[in-house]
Structure formats: structure tokens, C-alpha cells
Length: 67
Image 1: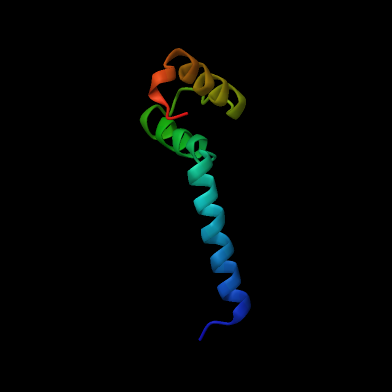
Image 2: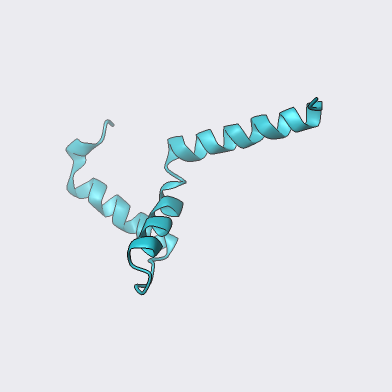
């Protein structure tokens, strides 16, 4: 039987996961995982470099986004 605090922790974890997915916050984590698996000897860009490149790609292809 779960307690109220365990349920609240589960809800908080789910909400955190959802918000990270919707806002794209988890994209860097996924990128790092794929990059390290595919190219273990190559350096992984910092989060700032990743976000800068991501924004540059959005600017180059403005029709690719909804807003």
C-alpha cells in the first residue's frame, strides 16, 4: 500500500518528466546519450553549444516550427 507522500513523489516525478519533454529540456540529455554511444572518442558539446546550434538551426529553417 502506498502512502500519500509516495503518491505525491510519483506525481511530481511524472510532472517533471512531462515538463522536460514539452519544453525540450530533455533534448540535450538524449543527445549526449546518443553521441557517447555512437562516437565515444569525440568530445560532446556543452549544453550552451548544443542550445546555440539548436537555435541556429531553427533560424535557418523557420518553416520547420509551428510558431
